[in-house]
Amino acid sequence: MTTNNSINFLVYCIEEYKTANKMTGKDVIKLFKQYDIMGYIRSCYGALHTMGGLAISEDINLLIKGVNKGSANT
Image (cartoon, rainbow, N blue to C red; front, side):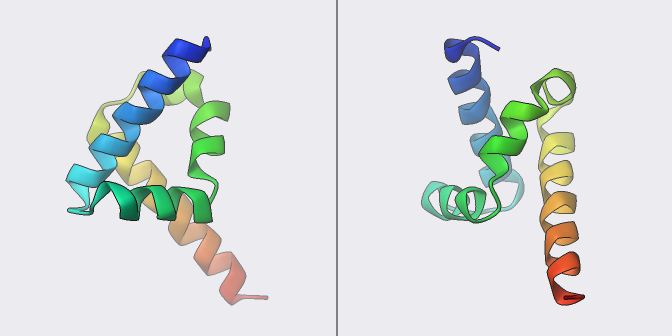
């Protein structure tokens, strides 16, 4: 993934997540940093860029829930 594509896709994911979850951009950035969602998006670009915005948002929510569920078991 080129730098330009990376930035554009991250912005797209942030905007889609913000809209789907009725959040502010600031809150999305804070959440994405907390769970390293930007790293996830970069590492899974190949699969994620073939999905629609709503599917990406749902995937991110599942990832966050999985992390939270895992930390509750420790």
